Image (cartoon, rainbow, N blue to C red):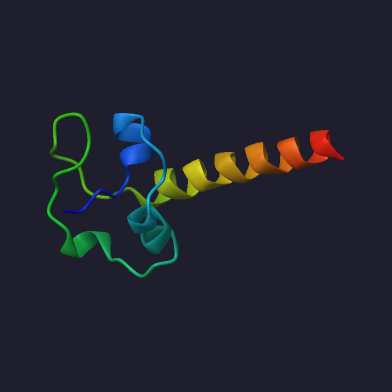
Length: 67
């Protein structure tokens, strides 16, 4: 079962599939449009990268606060 882009659409954590999408190991044009609230959206590379950027910023902030 593909769980790509669960982070923004379903409120779950980023997944390995999201990482593979971000690294261009998955091609959105080859996936059915089954994502999003209406389950009619394609994979969204830009939104997935934005979610990883937000996670990176959170991790960096926590590291700075720790030291």
